[in-house]
Amino acid sequence: MLIKRVPSTDAPLDLLLEADPSVETIRGYLENSSCYVATIGNETVGAYVIQPMGDGAHELMNIAVAPAHQRKGIGVKLLNHAITMAREVGAQRLELSTGTFGYQLAFYQRAGFRVIAVERDHFLTHYDAPIYENGIQHKDRLRLALEY
Ligand SMILES: CC(C)(COP(=O)(O)OP(=O)(O)OC[C@H]1O[C@@H](n2cnc3c(N)ncnc32)[C@H](O)[C@@H]1OP(=O)(O)O)[C@@H](O)C(=O)NCCC(=O)NCCS
Image (tube, rainbow, N blue to C red; front, side, top):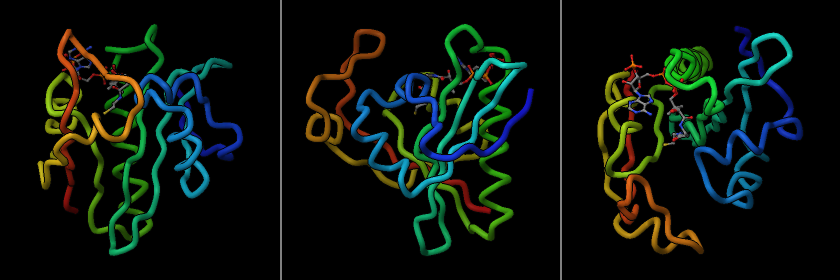
């Protein structure tokens, strides 16, 4: 598997939509971000988007693995790549947002991320349509950070 940076114009939107249901939101942050894709042969199997926040922090805006390739360790490799990339450009911490429940929370916490804030009602006020996972509606959003 190869992980390489691509121009934002070549970002795999279909894949990024697995992690964020709003194409407008994704397009908005892609402009000021770096997008990395993971490929196996000619197939794009995963991607992440990272952005400098200032203040010594970078934000992981999106991370997604193609459904047919999930649960094979690609997500962990992409997350570790993002952690290394931010560290190499001098970041002191990497932040991200995620829902308050679900396997994604454990996925990040296993990598050392910790909760730093709760944004109540974020998913109710920032998205047009309700977002459900496992039959539960996402309402609040968590901010997580990994301190280097
Ligand atoms: C989150 C995501 C990037 C993880 O990628 P992945 O390649 O499937 O993850 P890995 O194979 O590296 O899995 C690492 C661990 O995460 C956990 N995990 C991953 N997917 C899981 C699932 N569907 N259910 C339960 N646990 C899961 C497991 O503990 C797994 O380890 P294990 O397979 O040894 O049990 C991927 O599931 C994805 O693209 N999801 C949709 C988009 C998304 O939700 N992005 C994050 C937004 S906050």
